[in-house]
Image 1 (tube, protein in one colour):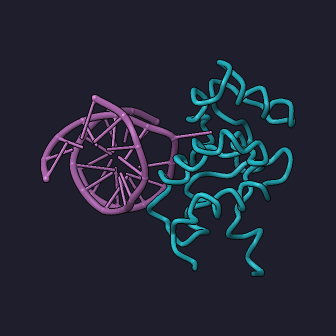
Image 2 (image 1 turned 90 degrees about the vertical axis):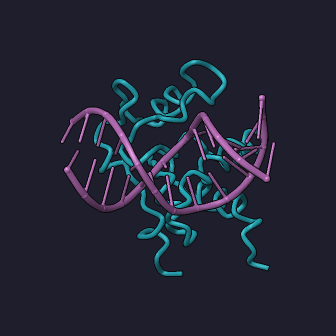
Length: 112
DNA sequence: ATTCTGACGTGGG
DNA sequence: CCCCACGCCAGAA
């Protein structure tokens, strides 16, 4: 077990733990999975999670706090709307006070 | 089989 | 701040 074919599921496990009103990045998830250089695969995993509505994919953005995955959601602005409904302010695809909203799995889940 | 493209990140200039 | 090259690896053409 522990083979990386579970990479998608492991990404989902972490995404599900992102608290309401908080966000994290693809790279942060990848890092926590021990695959720092495979941030792209996390994005791919989120893309594949469309069927799974238990995965809050809208809470995963890039390292700068930009909504780079926006166009992969249903509506034109669904991702932004979901985040705004959680109290996150967004201007020009950029999350405001990003550092404050950022939830780092490597820190928050460190005691494991 | 080969090439290109990404929901990315890092490093160099 | 910007732009570019590279590493990563799954899919599409």
